[in-house]
Amino acid sequence: MCQSTAFVCAILAALFAVASSNNCKTLQIQANGALINGTYTIQNSDGQSYKIYCQFYDGYGYTFLSTSTNVNVDMSSLYDDKSHVIIRHKRSSGVQYTSTMAQLGTFSSNPVSVQYSGHSGYQGPQNTAMAPYIFVGFIPQSLNRKDDLQGWKVNGEDLTFNNCDGNPNSYIAFFFNPSGQGYTDNVGGHNKLMYQWYDGASAVAQSEYLPDEFFANYHEVHQGGCGGYSRGSNVPTGGAVGMKFSDVRMRSSGGGRGRANDIPGNLYRSHLDVFVCLRISTHGWRSLSYLQRKWRLVRLNTRMRK
Ligand SMILES: *[C@@H]1O[C@H](CO)[C@@H](O)[C@H](O)[C@H]1NC(C)=O
Image (cartoon, rainbow, N blue to C red; front, side):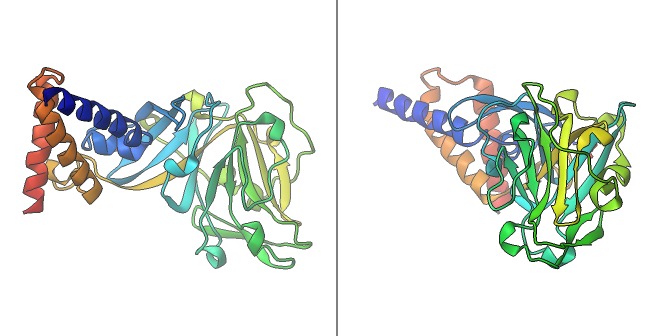
């Protein structure tokens, strides 16, 4: 009897470890809202490690992917809010800047798509020899029309061009370039449509700086069909893409500890975890502090339900 309980608990613990710690959101939920902004190591579904930076606000946050990443990454596990991305960049002065990029008003019902070394549904980038890369797609190929007004919304402002020939490019991409390739193709124009994410960005407080390993030194911007194509040597900068996740509460803010991560999935997981693992505790598999932590969770969750 004791042994089979231990066995079940070990299996469940292993399952939870894999299923619930593979992104910023689940890490924060597991910690019951106590995690601070920082670099965390997580694993893909093959158990290979890679690093992310988690920036937590009360209720939401952003995930950045380290440029040291060279394993498969399931991007869809890193973000669930596709309304916009953040483009963080770092200039040679060392100062970091931030911009928000979203769909143009007329395309706002479509998600902004962030992909890892891929461009499903979109025309892809040209400098693929610099893979891995992060691809941020805006107007998908299926919605592209010749002579349409296209573009994107940068820091709240619609920036448009007329797609003269229906060429369906609509992306910005950042390349990790681990093998040190040079750029192919020519530098295009530096105009507002192409570079407002750079020229119109706001400086970030030093306390919010991302570590260097999150900045990719090569980028490519492409719009149309007569919008523009540019690779990055006219903008000597590192860039990073912030992907938004939602529904995460921080312990230190809002209505106090009881509000931390009060979402149904988390309640369910905490209870199940506790009931199975309490059994095993009598056999000394779990430390006292682990049990105390879990017990606090149960009490909190019970209070919240009332
Ligand atoms: C994370 O950084 C943001 C921006 O500086 C800040 O508003 C927030 O309070 C920080 N959160 C934590 C948990 O450190």
